[in-house]
Image (cartoon, rainbow over all chains, first blue to last red; front, side, top):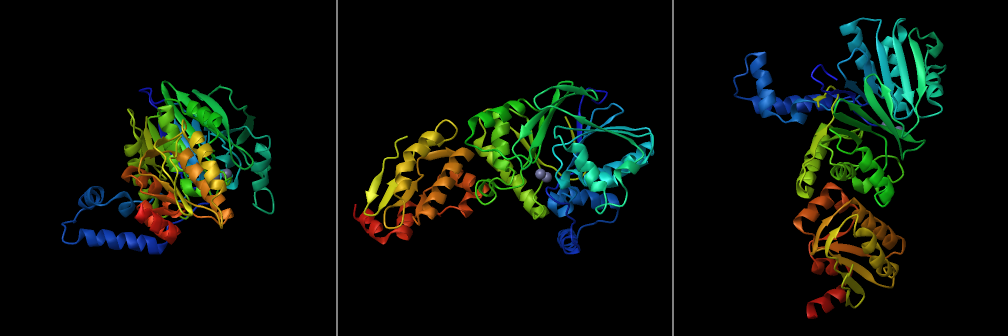
Length: 324
Length: 124
Ligand SMILES: [Zn+2]
Ligand SMILES: [Zn+2]
């Protein structure tokens, strides 16, 4: 928690399945549209330009959701770092730690949803792992957690073997549905439906609750399962939810591909009385306009299906911070 | 759930009422099932008249998806017609309008699915 007892969440990677990068054509398109909008305006200082961007352009017009794969930081205000997943966003996070806190003497706790490539691929580029004096604990419920990390460092996939990493690295096996006390947080993992299984995590710090639930498919006609997830999300301040597919895709051609939709995320949050739903693990094919439209549509759906409680809807982007 | 079936020659029009969500979808699925069994090539065409459906959740949409898959596998025709504005938005947001045959009205659905049924509908 922060000194004021609040949790913060920072997104370092929000893209599903594989990292993506904005193309020059997309950058150019954004610039052309911004410059056209700015024509005739007095934009002589950086401040005036920044104010114009903030006031006059929508998110997709002036930002990008970003392209790193899954990595979310839970900022507790204590010295230890807490992360969910080590996708390519972990590279950026690691570099930020190096610049702000120096190369050594840090402790990291990483909770792994599963070991699909997009969730572990940042680790070989996580610089703190190469420095003696850093301490990294990797938590997960999969029996082959350590094997997956060692495997991606091994030849012929990567030149530096895992055994040559200088940090102290420990793997900690957790059991689903058990509550742990780790790095000042109460943590409970939950089994999710996904190829090779995945696990969601419910974190409680002080009176704030964050649920990290990615790479999870939900069968809407399995009422027991739906109720169990509503319980897992119960009264959460923030639910980070895999909304990679549309509901139609998730129930037809992409059924059993292991992902969920904005519609199901909203229904679960409504059942659970969760305060905020954050769309996450974005489809790599989606450009910024598409994700922004998905966010607008989900907000509209919330509006037309709202009973007495409102659910706030956000779409995660690389670099986004939420104070709870 | 009473679907109030009405037959126009080779086409059956079904009219569910109210909310199709976790508490009603199973019932909806069960009452729809016998009509879907006959929704096949050389047998019936089916139109769901949604004029009285106020809300449909993901579980209700899943019932429609399964019904549509069944119709396709039997070379039958299933249409959904006359969505209320809010339900139409739910269909759009969930992208179901892209995978189901949705018509503005029962009449327009009949016009597409069966000219004979349309004639009977207009005569009724
Ligand atoms: Zn993934
Ligand atoms: Zn996965």
